[in-house]
Image (cartoon, rainbow, N blue to C red; front, side):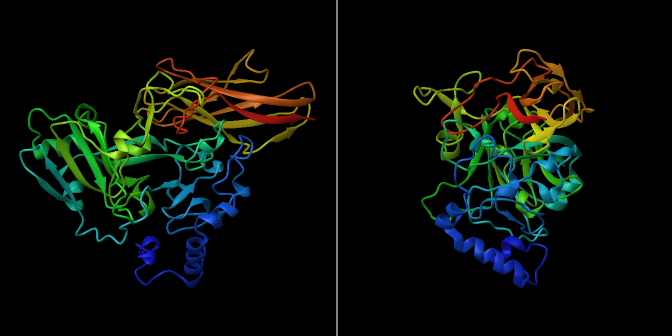
Length: 413
């Protein structure tokens, strides 16, 4: 089973060097990982420093930041965000359950559609490619807990820096078209999704997510079989994953195998207990006063991040410091990004790169100069086409949906 994880495309087995690496990581366990600092708290200054954290290379992947090994959680270094599309081999990895069914025969794989439908379906990968219209969308895939390691006060959970995200061109078929082929009966309320990963212990809830029927059937939700023009990488959900543009990746089910149409609300741990946020406009609460009402996390908030330079920078008086970043939201698109060097008293517009669509991130750049020496904290603030702007304060108990105005420290010499 261990060899299967890294060797979908290498039936003969992994190399001795790779096997030793895997066994070393597996042997670390909780205590060893903590000793490496992988589960420790990350300050705002520490989070972007990928070089200070363990780097590993797994099958079909380049060197990524190791967060956990079982299940695999790998973070993308920020320098891969300096392009419109994040390379497949550098795309972040996040699984919930350690039992990954990854030795998959594509000729035997089927996608099962059942429940409140006229005709239950078992669709092969060949049928999906040949019998349905292919569609593509460029969209950000972002973990709900991206940047959790920067939250203050710190919260438990995977201590991500800012690299639990990526931007890709996803190609597949509309979920709406697949549901139409099955013939959804009147009264459908929700649609649930399950992949092939399983928990090592029977008591662990199966990872199943659900969408309200109107969202599932809106023509934008997709069953993807390609990512940036190639088959999905194994660790990113091969051979099929759900794509829910504008929503956090908890809904983007990997190794998608079961779609069930429901005539009543879905009940399950990963919707009713996990992945919930305070029920208010900014998903905000305080450690002293937790929100009484919560709802499932869903659409992404507006964000802007510095991606270059990756750490504190030094620049001479009247010399230029070129900054780069990305900005995105939940689907209206980015209107502008502004930079401040005086604690938000004044703002200057950054240069925006061409848009690849409202679900894609939009790269930006800004040339900073100062006539005086000293420490400078640069702020980045994005505004979406819908008028949403990043917050000055944001915290919740789960470390979800970070959307604060980010900062970058520089020294003018």
